[in-house]
Amino acid sequence: MALDTIYSSRPGDAVPLGCSSVSRIPTSQKLVVALDKPNATQAQKLVDELGPLVEVYKVGLELLFGEGIEFARGLQSQGKLVFLDMKLLDIPNTIEKAVANIARLQFDFLTVHGLDRKTIAAAVRGRDLGDSRPKADRLKLLAVTVLTSSTEEDLREQGAHESSIVLGVRRAEMACRGGFDGVIASGHEARAIRRATAENFIIKVPGIRLSGSTAGDQSRVMTPARALREGADYLVVGRPIIEAQNPAAAAKRILDEMRSVGPQSLSQRD
View 1 (tube, rainbow, N blue to C red):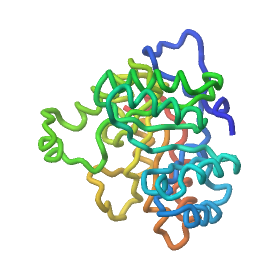
View 2: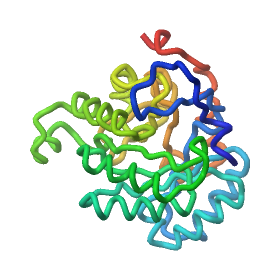
View 3: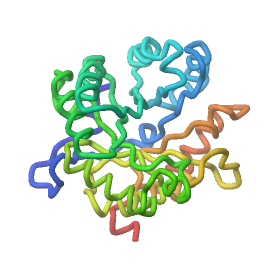
View 4: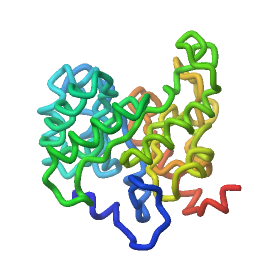
């Protein structure tokens, strides 16, 4: 599935340097299912169970080291969009070369920790070097702002002297101006990030939980409907679907809740 069905550039839009333009995304593509499985066999079983309900999958570190890259190629051949959640962080030279190699694989999304301008610039150089596809189809770089498992106390232990919202917004602005396409951020920061960047800057929100469900090891969770109202473009959902007795029914319930929100402009989120 080509990304030009999702992304389009509109000349004249007041979008900060580096921000992508996102056309209307079908609800079926706003749901990203996290394939947090130890091997390709279990992951493919879940994909088969979900069938056409889900079009976008996240392949994270657990699966990446268990036949993940070849499995991700297989997802592409099934017409799925692939989000590599690698959360890269290293010296600029390594980031540039690693992202260039990843871009050559022609997946759809990649995460990099958006901690500083050097890392962001290196990732952009690598993507531009490695991805020969048209701009609308090329690898979308997403900056990790603040992990949804992080509490304010965790941030203080890390040496951060800002709240999660202030830190997340600052990193999102930096990523947008540096040429990234979007961020991975808590729904609690989505509204502020949208205002600080652009209506067309991609915001993917993890830590999604249905009302009444347990948060697990996540500290800042949000329901699907509220996350969309706060400004999320995509919702990344793992355990509420993959640990459900009937994953397809769980995915349908989430999609139904997402569809109940409908399209909203930024002003409608106030």
